[in-house]
Length: 388
Image (cartoon, rainbow, N blue to C red; front, side, top):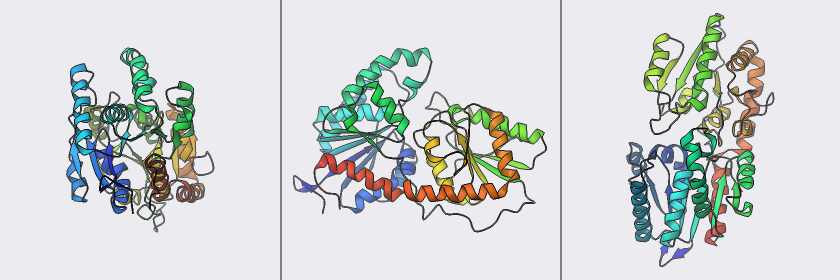
């Protein structure tokens, strides 16, 4: 039984910057909480995945939030809206994902008297990693807000990799005693499984990059590597799965992606709902990202025992150890990416060995049951009652 508050079960709010994120990354957590008897409210800006969450029996409500807004009046209105929501709903705990939701959700929760706050962020975000003038201007403001929002004895900051833990500890934004390391959102290893069929060596190698279409996912390097290997006459099909993200400053324009597809350098699949099916139909997965929290797409591919090529950057190197369960290449290096793909094409036995080791790591560290259990342990720290 869960702890009762004022005659009802504990209520938890999950707050993210897209309904897509809640559906794809936190659906299993939400269903696990519901199965344990918690009352649950999921909130995000409106989108098509809200109804999919409701179809699962989850309560989802849209938030009047513009991810890119810097208008002070609009942002103050959002804070007021969240405070009113939390006062009406009286949750025991608010769990925010990404920096903006973590800051706004935590500040609103403090104003509304919510007993506990959990904030999960992947790195310091655009404001702290970009060299843009706008990002530099916002940095001291956001740092102050983060200190006010993420700190306190009744709050925990959840980070996805040791590099981010060290980064936040150095920043002084949050007392390191309040930081918890949980590797991502987990993967259902019963859905993502190795394929039974052996690749036909007479068919072109099928290479996949599956991610939001952002420049900092290494999209440009992927296209350059594809051109390089095509010019060498190698039989390789380069697949690109994902949609542009107009709400992100690093979004790749859709016209650019369509031009690549028209050129024939890449096959653009758009958004793919059935990722287990897609991964069963490819031979290799790459992610030449500039930085990650913990890349779920890479972990899903590892669970399928596929050979992986990714960059030696925070987040990615938590999933792949070079030469052990995948190959690491330098960031922003299309030639190295092409060379690693060619190496695995020329040595199928190496690819099989790396893929098998990758699945073993996922089962031990990244299975969603492990991650959900760690998350519930954090809730228990703050709510003060054992989670069944």
